[in-house]
Amino acid sequence: MNFQNIKQWSTRWLFSTNHKDIGTLY
Image (cartoon, rainbow, N blue to C red; front, side):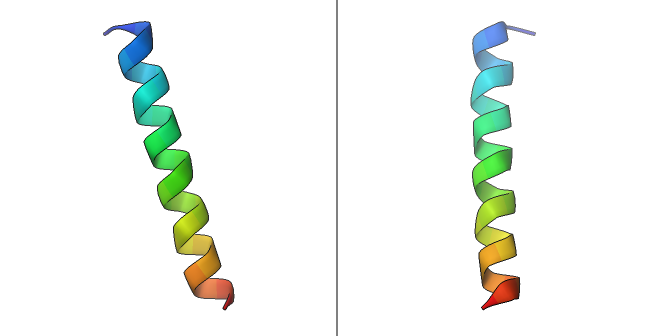
């Protein structure tokens, strides 16, 4: 795995989690 790939995946996952949390909270 490439470090860049991991970074991209992590960012995407974090963004998805944040979006999910926002949708759940509001």
